[in-house]
Image (cartoon, rainbow, N blue to C red; front, side, top):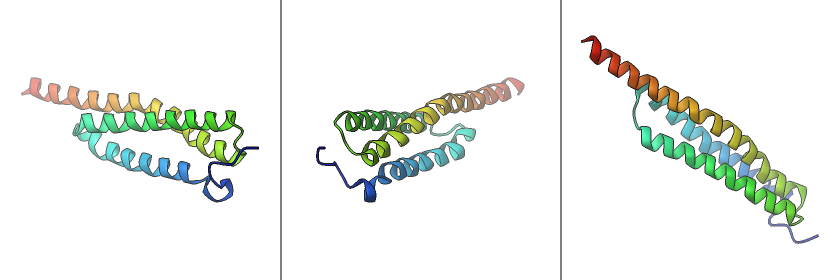
Length: 113
């Protein structure tokens, strides 16, 4: 067996927790700003960046799996990558819909007046 990249008994939780904290911060900004229609570009860019980080975690986890790393190393990378890719990817469409709804309300209020 090759030398582990890190001690899986001590550090396997770090990629998942770091990703979850970043996702929590961005999700809080989405919940706060999207219904108001504010900061669309930064929010969408941050959300797509989260998606890219999740994809990078998947690739890194697969490289660790193929190179014979211990279970804790590749699992600690693959789990947040897979969950992040699915959850963040699916919610990207929800974010676009929220911003579209805000824009439709603005246009409807202008037409009403």
